[in-house]
Amino acid sequence: MYFRKCLLTVLAAGFACTGAHADDATSEPIESAAATFRVEHVAGNLSIPWAMAFLADGRAVVSERAAGRLTLLELATGELTSLDNGPADIFVRANAGMLDVRAHPQFTDNGWIYYAYTAGTEALNTTVVERARLDGSRLINRERIFEALPWFHGDIVYGCRLAFRDGYLYVTMGERWDLRHLAQSVGSHLGKVMRLHEDGSVPDDNPFVDVPGAAAAVWSYGHRNPQGLTVHPQTGELWLHEHGPRGGDEVNLVHRGRNYGWPIVSYGKEYSGEPVDPGRKGHTGMEDMEGPVHYWDPSIAPSGMMFYDGDAFPGWRGDMFIGALAGAYISRLVMKGATVIGEERLLEDALRRVRFLEQGPEGYIYFGVDGGEILRLVPAHTPR
Image 1 (tube, rainbow, N blue to C red):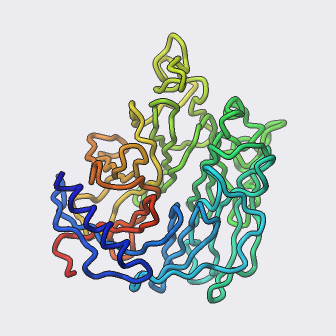
Image 2 (image 1 turned 180 degrees about the vertical axis):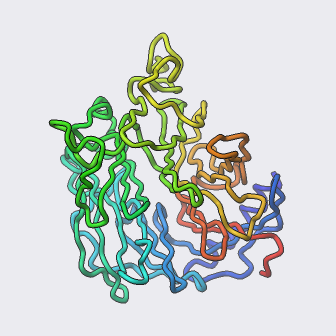
């Protein structure tokens, strides 16, 4: 109840101050197992803020899924500016719209911003990845560098997150629900992680490049709906999480060419209540399929993912943070190496559905929630 009262105060203040930063839009100190923090309002009036990419000049680019646009955010003031010359073929409905956005690791040198969105119509659509540069509040030099195949009707289960590692771009793609059987086929992009060069070309050492009929971009397969993807800041390992069906949400350590099981095995059930894998519980006995590092049953419906390595919260260093759509909280997974040894649920039952989490340049944790707010966790001693 204390968490809920504190955060609802912040959300109420945020709605009263949309369009401008509010110094008083902050909670009282909240004590967790390894840190004491406050929650601050950063910006409001957004339409499902789905992702956020920090730039080097005190600004960030926010993707608004339900509005189908990218928006420039001034972190110091909360001022929002819609970016012009965005894609004209964006399809917005249900899970579809503007999805992930990332700044290139060398953004200050090359100026590239990468973003994913759903292109097409309800009758036929897919996820695409583009890159562009900023010219004031306008996107220029736009290039489409990836298009997930096959195109399909419907408006759910797209993934889709982006991550850079070692000069490569990784892209997650959901299995589009009715095409879930394709998650086991390396001949499509559905239910996969893709590995690309930064210009969208396919590396010649990808695991299925020489397999007849395979999609050369595929890096791993057997995924359901991966809405979290991140690189460990110390080890360089690639991690993702994905929605299970009715339960069985997974955290996975992604390895080259590996099969992660969906829809053959799962720790969840079908929405009908029937088992996904009759006679078996999850990955038991499935030596040719990679089991999860961690899973939830019942489901938390994860979205957004990050490892914390900042100085603002020393007690959280090395831990993984994941947003929960179901239950509406932030899951802090306490890590020992590649093993989850505990979970703490921050702000449980106090938040709206959490869409993304990002570590800011000052070490604060920024997150976006349904209802249009961007908030951040700051140390309790931070001046208001």
